[in-house]
Length: 264
Image (cartoon, rainbow, N blue to C red; front, side, top):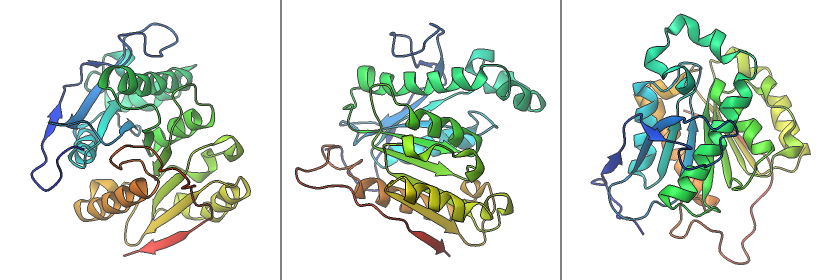
């Protein structure tokens, strides 16, 4: 078990870690790079692949990866613009067009699968201790990967402000889902009841958190981010993604049901 407590340090790697440099899952053979953050000592509790929003692998997203690493996880942030030279090489105005380009989604999702394989094959995270984090636009890619996982599978999916209208095909998801939304995000609020019904009808263990006084990019607000992080860590550990072994104890089954909570 890795050391715990406020003095936990992170062993970072720059945006140069080869996500699939060892044949870890990219279908077209392209070398895709990302940012790896892991505990400085000891084995990680579990592994998380972080799929960022349309802004790409920004310093804020690196901060998210490091925050989870301080809690004991190995986190691999995948740069959605890695094939174009990386986020910093792509002007902000050009990013939406690149993300919507032909086959762009297929390539990004292949890179996420490659990142999961990298965590398992290179970092040494057990294949039954992997989860997906998706922020905004990146949550759509995480959702699609969770619907059609090629080994390794995923134990949990966490979404942040991903528009519910894009989260279709819930019956194909085989992992618990935690979805965070800001109460002031009007673009998502109207569709949340439909999303909850969709998840419930599919029999998915799910939790929807609605954060009061928060908008769409609530993870960029320091106070809101702390509350979201605390909730997310508790949720992951409750599903045994972040326990000592990363596996569910014998005889313990995941809970099922729907819950929507408005948080202050």
